[in-house]
Image (cartoon, rainbow, N blue to C red; front, side, top):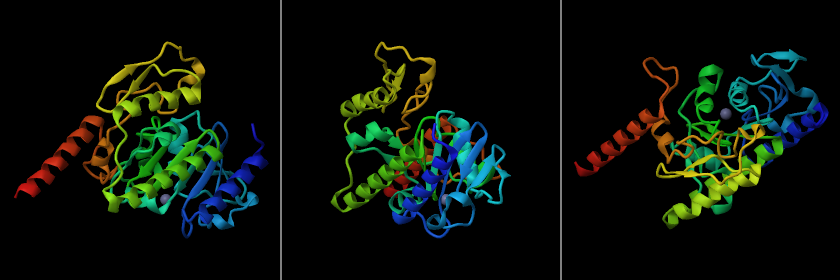
Amino acid sequence: MPSRAELATDIVRVSHALHRNGWVANHDGNVSVRLAPGRYLVTPTATSKLDITEGGLAVVGDDGKPVEGEARPPSEFALHLGAFAERPDIGAVIHAHPPYATAIACTGKGITTFLAEAVVSIGPEVPVTTFALPFGAAGAAPIRALIDRYDALLLCRHGVITVGKDLETALLRMELVEHMAKIATLALPHGGVQPLPEDVLRPLIQKRRGAKLGLAAERTALPGGEAEPAPAAAPTAASSWTPAGPPPAPDAWSGGKTEGACGVVYGAPGVETPRNEELASAVKTAIDRHLAGKNS
Ligand SMILES: [Zn+2]
């Protein structure tokens, strides 16, 4: 377990990398680590990521309030708290606005992983959340709804959040999301990226789980709603989380369903948190409208 001083140095290094890579502007972006249960070290509010120092970090409790020192956390730390609450296995969260990935998030789309190596590293999909302003419990809700199954999310009309056992892992995931988004964008004039065939995707998802755990998942949800029995190895208590999701849910791969909900404002009057059936219904309605428009 790294010391608090080492974790602070990691935060500074990652913050400077976010700035150097052009993934943040102004005071954008925030970086945090879990020091202990209910105790976090986080970049302070209203500070360029270029100006982050070890001594200027905020120490924050589970209620999002500072517990020592003068530094205050950003309001977006609520998003980190949502991820930490859902994922006891993670030690670090990064939020940034890398331009290619944020551009896709601002169109309301997610990224279906189209590179074989990336499926192993980040899973078959980087889905987009529903929309929420990025503070408080309402801001964290769209992240909490998905982060148990994914290590990286596009935030609807906002940016990207990645998690990892440590900051290095979360940073590599941020880098990969942005890299895929850039490639997808560069491919547009050539007709766009092509999805990986299902028979290629399936063993890659298994490999992802096996590579991280050395254990097999009990069941693996696959595009098309199929579920595949896992190889015989039995998960242990320590493996309740799998890289592509905790005990894999039937919807571990949303098949792009989340995209139908980017635009729903959590907490808006009369708007309930969408469930999977509602997401599917929203997608169907959008497609029907699109087709009706084409035919008229
Ligand atoms: Zn942001």
